[in-house]
Length: 340
Ligand code: PMP
Image 1 (cartoon, rainbow, N blue to C red):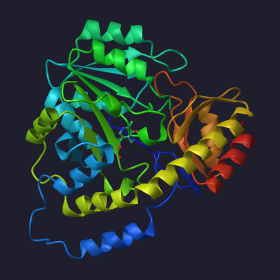
Image 2 (cartoon, helix red, strand yellow; image 1 turned 135 degrees about the vertical axis):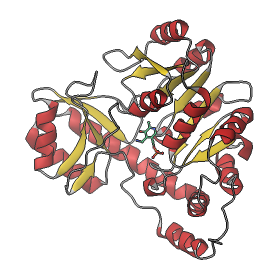
Image 3 (cartoon, rainbow, N blue to C red; image 1 turned 90 degrees about the vertical axis):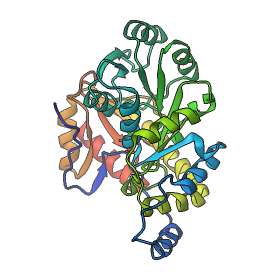
Image 4 (cartoon, rainbow, N blue to C red; image 1 turned 120 degrees about the vertical axis):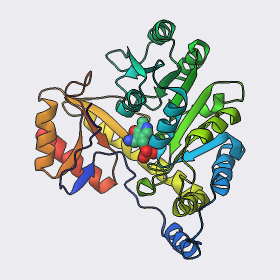
């Protein structure tokens, strides 16, 4: 098997991994340092991470029994697939999408069935229904906004999926805060739906490795049987719990990033590139006159790194840029104007 890679190159402007361009607020750092100094390091942490899960639940108006947290949303996805996939079972994805959905599913021994998106990367509900009727997947993935395309899935499509899938529907909302709606509004105890989220993007905490899902309490209880004891260390529980006190600052960052995303898209559309609509903190684009690889190299030569998706299946010549600070975005725009 191939592993999952995200090549790094030494550059001045790094816009390739969809992180937040802003560090967390200094007050969060201070509060974190103060609480860390009081940790009883000789004891195991709270195994159920109760306070953290209560805080996350409160953010979404649900109790802690509806929240499962893990070391990044990647680990949430892994725990879901260890619980519900495996040999003899099928997992459905709609390509192109986040590569780890299929990758982790294969690692568990499951068969992955890939549905196809249209040329504009939208997903036809008829294609979704065709794939789930034929493959009868135990787990079906949607990603909204979708990585790497940036498109949001319409609420109607998620409702259609819920009416069609025979098993669990996972909506990966790693970029959910940048989008216009959330599938969390469709959650209830009787619906086999989970929504996954992360602290890596909006919360400016990619280094902390913290993600979670919202879902039915019975499902969270199943995941707790599968995850390792004490999988969330004391420092991470503190980091996440304290971050929740800064929801207002995070909201302001989301607005700033969305405004910059729209400014970038407008500026790029005046150049020789096609830009796909995005509800996330990144934009997928395709140069019209030069190859994606040439443009990627031209940007690296100007010390700007974006994600090269140009050789990925179904993404011919596409590149993905993460929204940075206004200064980083200006440097990217002037480099792009020269290169294309
Ligand atoms: N889902 C999607 C769609 C992502 O793009 C990412 C980050 N690349 C993740 C999940 C994983 O994020 P993390 O493990 O940092 O929470």
